[in-house]
Length: 145
Image (cartoon, rainbow, N blue to C red; front, side):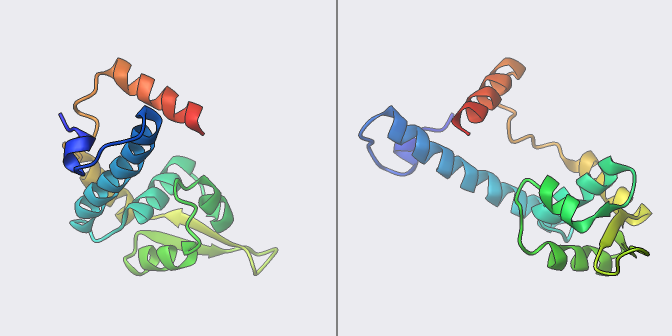
């Protein structure tokens, strides 16, 4: 099990300061793990998030709706979707009523990629936690926000 004080060779004024630094440190650790994992599939964690949102919707969604549902409300949603479109993972559909509105829909290739990722998603980042501890962590993070 990790020890933040040893990992970053630092002492903290109190446990609240340590907790805050630990959240930031762990968020960065998770980001690095995700980037490495998804790089093998030629996508970013944000692109994975877009594919999961489109899969769960079961219908084309406005780009703005996808952006609102993302974990990371990326201002680069158009660029992220352009890359997914270029890789044939999504389709873009113009709205017949309003040319400014674009819908996105996951394609079979995108669904296949998600299946591959799910099969390979063995190294669970929370493997050291019990289900009860995972719920407690989630509840505490909700309480912070």
